[in-house]
Length: 177
Image (cartoon, rainbow, N blue to C red; front, top):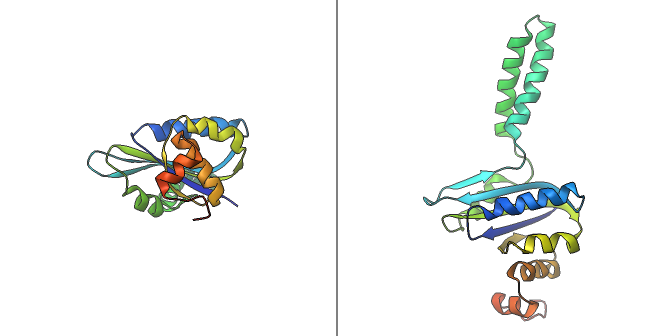
């Protein structure tokens, strides 16, 4: 089962830095990322999504390959590749992978201008190794599907404080609120 975590950052570049750290950790088999999207809100309030998986490009390449193969059957591989690439790009633009884009845009509307957020969908990992790496960058948890205890550990790590500090900030009493 995949877990969703969304963390907001006070500037536009920090979410991208943390995604790079998570990519490095994935190459070390310390986290299994399904999707990681950087969302920024510019100074005019417009929300931008930076997907980790470029679906348009991948779909266009697949479409071009299949179009060329089908074009070979009709003695026109170049035309087939061009048509296939076009259809592939359209399919990539219309498809959604991982985290729902509308969900991310809705949450990103709560961000202040010139800030960013990182939305991560992961299947698992080694929290003892991942958490210290991302805690260096701070951030505020804005959405998660983690169990309450694990979410609290994440909040504490990102704030750089103790569990007591986080309870005061969230109004939690530590007795299952």
